[in-house]
Image (cartoon, rainbow, N blue to C red; front, side, top):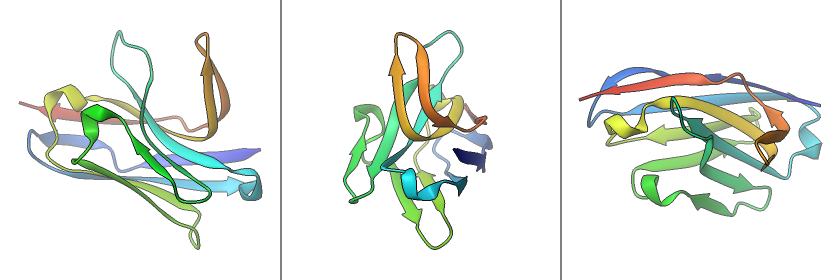
Length: 120
């Protein structure tokens, strides 16, 4: 079991920046991939970015060039630096380890989420 706790969300004006953190604990050795997902009201949860054990990174097209995912293995912490934020980035952001979403069912380990609100 992996436990994940997100922090760093908040209210920011369009064009601003936020940095999300995700502290992992428990069976860290079992983690092959970690990622950030987000879910806006009335929408499905979607991938924002993920990073594999080997360091391969993937971003959603909507955040490429604006968001950066990184990790600090010594601190067991995952980060998401979000720059040039837009109102459409408003959502609850979730950290996940070994995630999978199948027919609306969430597999893997998930945090409780942190709210990001971008005002226009």
